[in-house]
Length: 153
Image 1 (cartoon, rainbow, N blue to C red):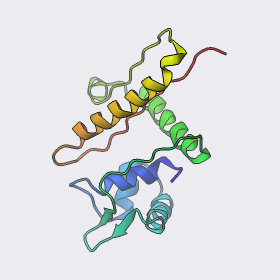
Image 2 (cartoon, one colour):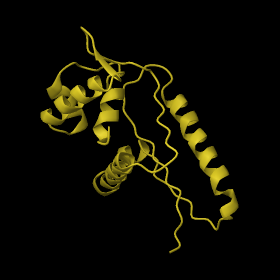
Image 3 (cartoon, rainbow, N blue to C red):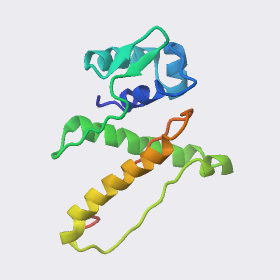
Image 4 (cartoon, rainbow, N blue to C red):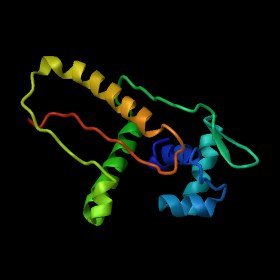
């Protein structure tokens, strides 16, 4: 599931207004029908999505993919999401666009001994925010990214 739209389709299927129509899915995500078809087939082959009469259903309502080492597919996914955030900043400058997003940063001098503890806390905080966002009927699809990395060479 290296392409960003694999995960997006999984969660789009849970939205109240979801339509079991490849054209509709492609239009919602700004991808091609081929990409939709490929992703649906791939997700079903992986056993994380099943087709129903009314649409598609995630096999597990909440999936948490935790890796303890670097994987090329995960790096590709993150790079694609960072690119989408850059597009958001470049192309969506209205007040309404601004009010629908939170792209922020903190640059801080850091004690390297605290990085692992901070990584764990950041991950838990992201999942806590995801729980808040998914309460009630879902009608939108959002991405939450966080980057924690050294700026030193």
